[in-house]
Amino acid sequence: MTEYSKMTAGLDIGDKLSEICLLDEQGEVVERKRISTTPHSLTKYFSRFDSLCVAIEVSFHSPWISRLLGELGHEVIIANSRKVALISKSNHKSDERDAELLARLARSDRKLLYPVEHRSEECQQDMTVVSSRDALIRARTLLVNRVRGVVKSSGSRLKSTATSRFHKLADDVPQAQRPATDPLMATIEEINKRIAELDKTIEGLCAKYPVTEVMRSVPGVGPVTALTFVLAIMDPNRFSKNRNVGAYLGLVPRKHQSSDEDPELRITRAGNTYLRRLLVNAAHYVLGPFGPDSALRRCGLAIAARGGKRAKKRAAVAVARKLAVLLNSQWKNGDFYEPFPSRPTAGRGRPNTRMASIGGRAPDATLVKVSPLSDAHSAANRL
Image (cartoon, rainbow, N blue to C red; front, side):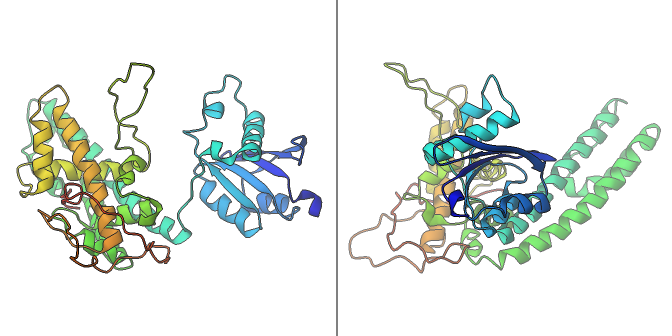
């Protein structure tokens, strides 16, 4: 089956059906086929070939499909769908056309697909625990807001309290509103129990990744933030410079420069949305009334003091970006938190013992130094 060794396939993944376009060495379409998006169908089709270059887009199914095709001996390129505008913004979009474009881009220059790498199956399972907790918290917030809205519609108001104790206000709801709010209150109480169970599970998961203990030395950074950072980044040495982690998480401004025009734009919001939200919440803690004095806090407050319509938002994003840089630096060097780190000088010795990536690979021998301000410190939501 050596005639297939240089063939390229584009796989447009659908929830139930997926489209395949197969190109030969000259770039001619050899076959088009639609199959079920199931392990059995994919295995049956791709086991016909010795080795293919298969291009797919990031999707809900792409993690297990990429692992399956890799086990069959194929090279898998996972395209970043946000970057491939030729597909996402096409005026003649269809499954057949998308599959063919994926194959042709992979055949000509795979860098045009901006390939990404999925985390391991074990890390993926650990991440589902964190994301399930987030889903429960968002559901609880929705129910709490609904109860408060129902009570306000009758002219009353429930007192402020922690969300975890909100269900204890059930007796304060007017009698006429009880039929509408009692089921919601019972559900909120049950969700609180499930969230507490997941918190214990996450504490146990942190023991699998010792670097989370170093990250949690930062005031306010708890198990959820530390574990999410480790599972989302996977390997701190994937960045040649620590500051690049800010761009990876979408915490840098967009760029649209042309001639003399270079407008100030909002952040890109690329990367892991949940981790970015955690880091921004951490930044609000740093800048808030309970944030301890530190170099990072002073830097953020200085940005906020400049004034302007979005000064506070800019400060929060800047602090979140520096927090990401700090956590990545801690992961590389194994350094614990210092509120006001001193500038490194010649002859002070090597950093602390460095942590390996979660994949088990030894970190790069080259250390990347970060400015004291970036290496400052952080605080985050106390999760």
